Amino acid sequence: MNKLMLYVHIPFCERKCNYCDFVSFNAKYDVIDAYIMKLLEEIESKSYLANDYEISSIYIGGGTPSFIDKKYIAFIMESLYKHYKVDSDAEISIEGNPNSLDSEKLKSYMDLGINRLSIGLQSANDDELKILGRVHNYNDFLNAYNSAIHVGFKNINIDIINGIPFQTLNTYKKTLKAVLMLNIKHISIYNLIIENGTPFKTMLAENKITLPLETDIVKMDEITRELTDYYRLHRYEISNYGKDGFECRHNLGYWSDVPYLGFGLNSSSYIKNIRLKNKVRFNDYIALDYKNYMLSDNQNGYYDEIKMIDEKEHMNEYTMLGFRKTTGINIDDFYKTFNKEFEEIYKANIKYYRSMELLCKKDNNYFLSDKGLDISNKIIADFMQ
Image 1 (cartoon, rainbow, N blue to C red):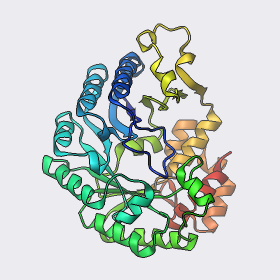
Image 2 (cartoon, rainbow, N blue to C red):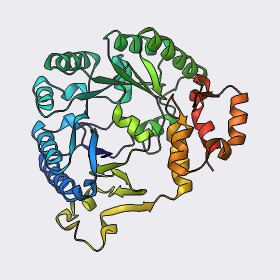
Image 3 (cartoon, rainbow, N blue to C red):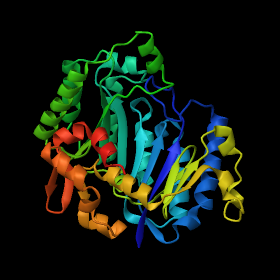
Image 4 (cartoon, rainbow, N blue to C red):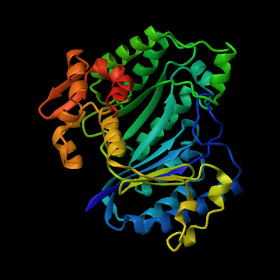
């Protein structure tokens, strides 16, 4: 049976961070309750789209899913199990922040079949956490991590950021080493991007923060490679490192052209070469009548965007996402998908970037070198047709 992934968006947070441009916000109990009830309607109403699929992974993200009452996560999981064919070996992930991950919630998640936990640490330096606008400190993280281990989580990811305002090579190295010394199985490491509309964008314009030099970011990436190698976590995607068998299957699915359904505010779906973008405005989403979704003559009204992906766009996305993986693009898989030869379509790009030692080939796979991954955005843009 064909594989399908599910994403559930929980847009609520205790407080929005200074770098965050995601659709997320704080809300009172009645707003959260109304949202979850609407989310459950959507999950049930769209289940017919998955009739020919088996669910290989589920990802509950946000926002901060651990911010809401554990009963809501139970409602969501019960609905997914009821209305979808969830594989017995499915990877089921949930995101959480240290200050809202207590033992009771963690035990509840385990009992619901959630088998992967992603904790948003971002830094082991309390001063940097304050700069980021986080609501926890490093000790909160250690308590949450130890609680997760105690209740039985074996697959735990830790998120950290480099390029934080005022961050030094030394403070970044201390953060990375502190996390890796916990013998973790997976770590996601993101370069900070200053997004429009965020407090950091304003603070930078007003000279209230200073970012590390670009040369320091390059050195941070070198530190990352050295320490992850030492602790035997292999890089399998631009920002992700894991021990063998602990790669995030859900994210690998995104990068490998696996279809998915997204539920909740501003979530996206990609199935049968159609991309669906849910409502981004909270009141618009809450007002939708999902109980009549399947019978509706105008399903366009349920989305902010419905787009048929043509072959050219599909090929561009396939290439872009494929080059995010350290294994790159398999030319046999490319041919099976498009009935076209990868080496013919991208002949000039392949020749140029191989001569620069930024693109490599092993067996039937083309992939970016370490140097290529560091400037992947430019290389990928050149491959876009």
